[in-house]
Amino acid sequence: NPGPWRIPYHHQGLLHYCREFGVQLEPFIELNHNSWLHSTGAFGGKAVRYRELASDFNGFTAELLAKAIDQHKLDELVPEEERAHIRDAMHSWGALNKDMAYAKGNTSSLRRGFEKPQGGGIDGAPVPSDPFARKDVMQSGLWNWMAFHERLDMQTTMFQPVGGMDQIGKGFTRQVKDLITLNCKVSSIHQDDRGVTVTYTDTAHGDAVRQAQADYCVCTIPLSVLSQL
Image 1 (cartoon, rainbow, N blue to C red):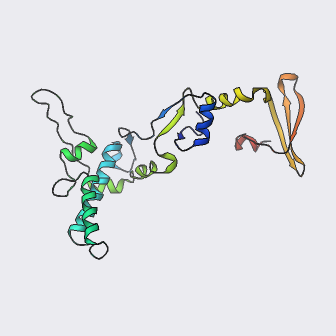
Image 2 (tube, rainbow, N blue to C red; image 1 turned 90 degrees about the vertical axis):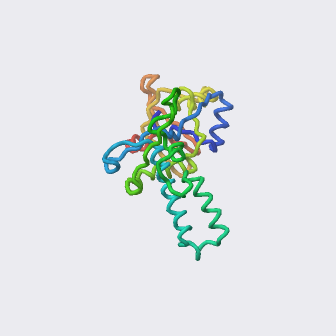
Image 3 (cartoon, helix red, strand yellow; image 1 turned 90 degrees about the horizontal axis):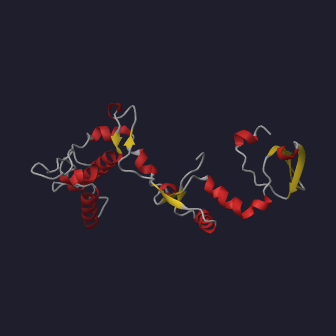
């Protein structure tokens, strides 16, 4: 799958052609909360789970904002009723405890994962995990990857063709196969006031040099190759 791979849910034009041409699609897992995040300059070079980093970042951010409200730091900026709503939102969004703190416990571990997951038997009780130090989370820079998935073109749901992206090209080929000439090597593309002339070598017919003329040329040759023509 060289080049673009993912198909966002809002690329309606491409999704339409896939449906019309019988190109089967399947989900592309864009955001995996169990995936690893790594930076040599963060957490001593140790990889951390996305869910751990995201939960801790959200939790600590929510706690700081809740503290600012409780300490009346935002009284001049935010009306009282709105402050109450924000405080409630931070409690829920950040998985804060009853003291409005993001700390080790079942509430935070239901987001970031448990040190020992719940099981069966007499010792089946789950063991909460320890959040990372707030300083380490904020200094890591890994929160950039949280923002990455918020971009419109990176939001779920994503799709991919079953069998690879070339299935889309094959779908188009089935529709216009009588118009396609294969085994031709383009040697030049010339444009003037009258249109475009493409010169190519027909390797399937004795390397005959031929030309095709048209009003327009839609060129999909990679720039690294096109620059050599």
